[in-house]
Image (cartoon, rainbow, N blue to C red; front, side, top):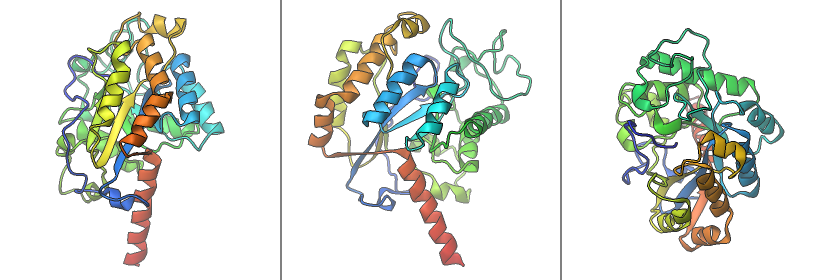
Length: 313
């Protein structure tokens, strides 16, 4: 969920109650005092460099979840990995912009897209504030991405948003509608959840994340370790997601990111290294943090629904 100028929603929301919906007590083995953290790798499928680093991070347990950019060139490699390794927690990184200068992607849905959604070459726009598609078009595109992922062998555990492009009052209901249709929990803070209809009974099953943390763009790769260690001290009881961007500082990723610093190749290499480091793992233990993944939340919601159906019968 890399942030770009013109974005209306920023990671790192204030602490808020998860109690309005499915709370932590419904996760077996945890209580309301538990400090739960999802260590989440964004941008899986963007390119082979990101894929290789994220696969290793998942295999080693350095990240607990990841989400897939279905429209991107290296998506098929992720689909093959997911087919071989259904045990790893993969969601859909709903993608509505194509922010790289010379490495592009566009919509999955088959409808004709006008300038509200794409540029003159049929690629997504580079910035969120260029995106002017209707909520219906946003819903259709996100739904098409989920459908293609499932058809390709991925069993998505959750939905989130690349650069949080959906962080607009008119887009949030479309994003949530897709997640509910496919029975997936979705990344959402209380501020944006307020734009969902409170009369919708489905809202009772939504999980609202207490905090979403991502390294700000003004950091340098050399300062990332200090940032990540420090934010672990601030994790409070509740559900927090820490967003990272693993990748390798290699020719492919340097070319794609045009050697820029923020979320560039060197930055992503450091994310990869820090999440695997003994220092980071020690900080998790020292701060009493328990790492979970989105699949556990999905299972808890499914089990709760099953009990409700049995009790109703």
